[in-house]
Image (tube, rainbow, N blue to C red; front, side, top):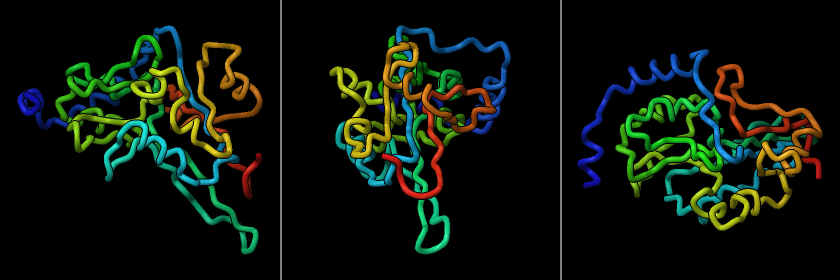
Amino acid sequence: MDNVRRQFIKGGTALVAATSLYLLHDAGAKDQTTGQHRYAMLHDENKCIGCNACSEACRATNQVPDGVARLRIERTGPYGEFPDQYYHFSRVSCQQCEQAPCVNVCPTGASYIDPETGIVTVNSWKCVGCQYCIAACPYHIRFINPVTHAADKCDFCRESNLREGKSPACVAACPTKALTFGDIDDPNSAIVAALNQQPVYRAKEDIGTHPKLFRIRAKAGGITL
């Protein structure tokens, strides 16, 4: 059954990638997020030390197989002159777009925005492994899970910790509190308070995806605790 549902769609990746570009820039596109919550995350690059506790916690909590990752920390540098050198650490994971090209191109509805949480999600049973969503993602973070043979990515631990009323595993594991998670529609949430404290940026804002992964840009040298 698993093979049958994946065999009816093959190829056409380049065509769908081009289609996704049109859909992404369609001025008449409706907002895909209409639910009760709009969960988002803030990564403070000044506090991140690149320890990878977040990625290891993600792997353990969500049973992510070896060889692939829902979350990784990208290190760039060193910058500056010895001995005053420093690195920058950036989170690489699903951006949780409100205008998600991966959702637009999915032929089976396997990739969708959860109406209750606003989280971009993958229903692995519906996924046929066509990889259209992988081609359409402008952030290049989706992958095919070698166990389920379905598209996979970060979903803010929607099926694990969040379902149990806990914070995403990466947030709980971070030793420097570099991650803040919450509902950006709740004016009293910790993430709204954090977003109001200092300037933030989002990756590729100019292409109109409206990502919900916010970042505090790293300053030169070290971390701020």
